[in-house]
Image (cartoon, rainbow, N blue to C red; front, top):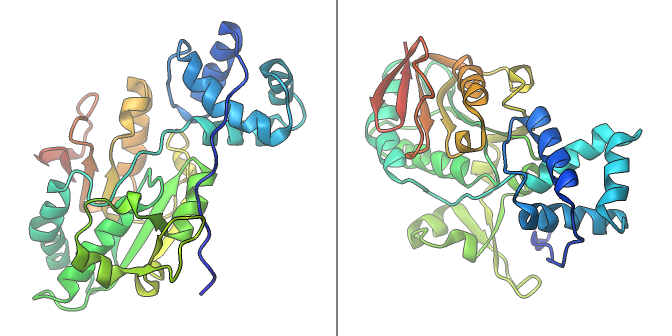
Length: 291
């Protein structure tokens, strides 16, 4: 196994941004990814995009706007999305969904052939650093060791941020990112670095679980970029709040199109469908079944 590397970057002071520049950046972000943030959040934009300016050696936002409009604009737009996408995640976040998966969702899908006749497919459609997807895989591993017996399954994680996808693929986490994760789960599914790296103790998801997972770029505003899968359970949690209603509907419909009949869509507990969507029936708090 390759040596662990510290995934955390330093934070510095960002250059100043004008209201017009902030509005232009927000407009480009929304058009490319559907993510909607307020143009008045100058400090947030300065901090996040300011890091990118330092990486490029660009002194101010005026020069950066020229770059966005120039020959390197398409590639830079992808980097801008990386800068401004919010990637809050944790293991077993909103734990009642994992309880449901263990006691109801997974047994129902197994009875329909998932994990037996074919892979049980779980998709985290805005996977961030991967904690959500790994948590779901840990639930399936627990079930495999119990009455359901050994299950065939596959884990798919997608995100619009290429930076977080690289970290998700590496499957390396700090002690702080594992807060609240029970010790038995750590022992079963995590490998601990032999020595601190950059002053941190790091952990990596164990190889058997990593081999089940695939991570790839997907833009929820462009359903054609999503993997060609038929998911039994799809997580689309705590991301709709960053979209306008039309973007929310597009994201939900795109994910639902890749659910098997009888499969489940899970939203964040504070989220709901922006309007009724044919073919999706609510079966629990933030849980929807595809007819």
